Image (cartoon, rainbow, N blue to C red):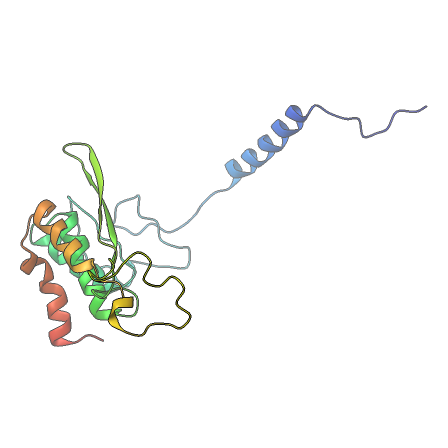
Length: 192
């Protein structure tokens, strides 16, 4: 009986060969993206981009960074950092700015949660501000109900306002009034 050309190999050797092949192809790739002069060398732009990104304002920060998909939210957070606020203040300012410009996605009519890490103490915890049942609600009030109840007792009480207030009061550097200024400005003056 002749031996098959497909001799079984030990699985560990085959796996090692496959991983080595994938690793070698990754090493052979070179990335020739443009790096914008005057910007940190760690900032790499997409290959088609030339120069600074359109949203680049030229502002640089030593104590924080803001990354938000909506530019109005990013501007609100950056303004708070410029005024001496910390990450908590900036996060709350961003949340309220987004409430104004994206009310369908974020807002005071809902709830949320915030995970906080205090670098100086190493402590990490959360603030849970999810919606709560109304005070008059009971655990089994909807058990056996066959039609939807359309009154307010079936609606959760929003918790975002209280949760963000607690975050700023206990862990922020600025007052809640200062943190809300960017959102109030957007609501007063409008945006486009």
